[in-house]
Image 1: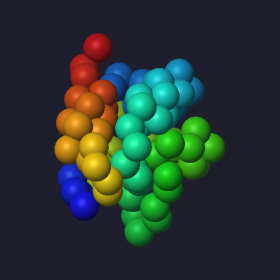
Image 2: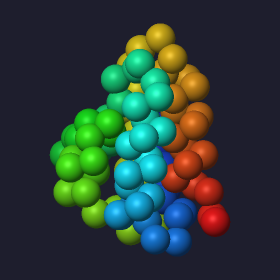
Image 3: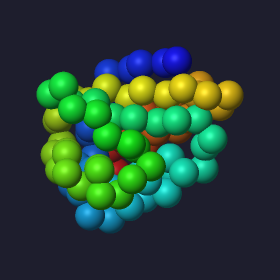
Image 4: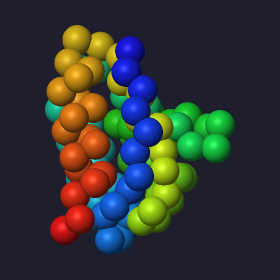
Length: 85
């Protein structure tokens, strides 16, 4: 299992379209993926869960991955959240 703290650097945060793209990216991996914020944990492969967090630019979350491709998943999702496009 891998846990990594990440600051969201996307201009629009992880809301609406970026949230959908994040979930689509997360679903490419077989590892179980979760995001944790303020003591709450959601499935990173769930658009509804991600929307409840309403992550804005500058907010910090913990990405948790557990499975055979956990390292690749963490790398891809951290890159997604920190891409400043």
